[in-house]
Image (cartoon, rainbow, N blue to C red; front, side):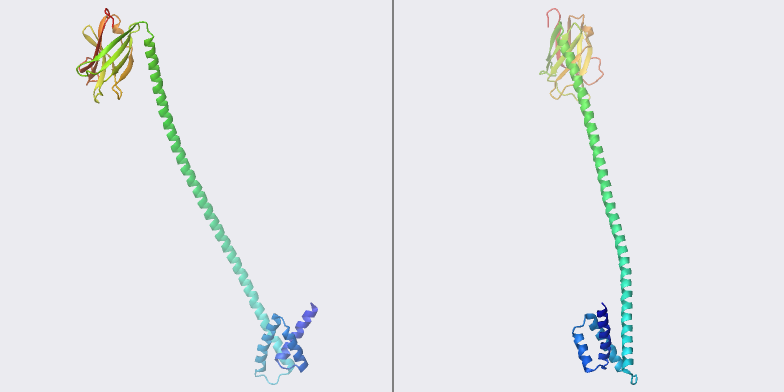
Length: 290
């Protein structure tokens, strides 16, 4: 390290004398050999001294001594190097400050970007949850509607099952009578059967080939005896014009040997007498059987 510093001072001193042209022949040759092997920094120093040396040699100063020229050249080159170092230091500090500002700005932008991304993700998640909740609510509502519908269907099937069981109970009676109903002029193709349980005064009624009534019309099932008609039941028909129902409103028939069953289509739903068209009719004669 000491040798390198010594060589550098020697190079610097010889360089100053070289550009001022105050070296003897041996020293000039020595310096030129050193210049051939000089580092980049030494070559830069040589260029600086050469420029400053020419300025000094062509200045108006009268007859300066070689020593004064050398001192002036070294001083000016040293000052120039200090200015360059100061500018470099200031530039470095400025660059460092700018890097700090850039880093702070970059970090701020990163935080803003990250916050924005998080907000978007959270917004998407919230929106997805809202859609999922709405879909789930709709599904629950649909399931509830299905359950209600199924419960109503089950209730209807239970009612039908109860009615069928009651009908089967009628068929188990020991005193059954079948009254056949035939079509009348208003409906010659209609027919039906009444299975009458005379022991318990109830009956199962099966009817067919009845036309669909208008909105204001209603089918009525009657029992006729002693020249009077008793409204037993009103009923409706299915799409095939058929009806199957049970009635236990036959207490008045217990002591009757002769009576008839009839089906009429009434325009007045509250009619107490058969005023409409007679569609079916059949009679029972207790002495002759059915």
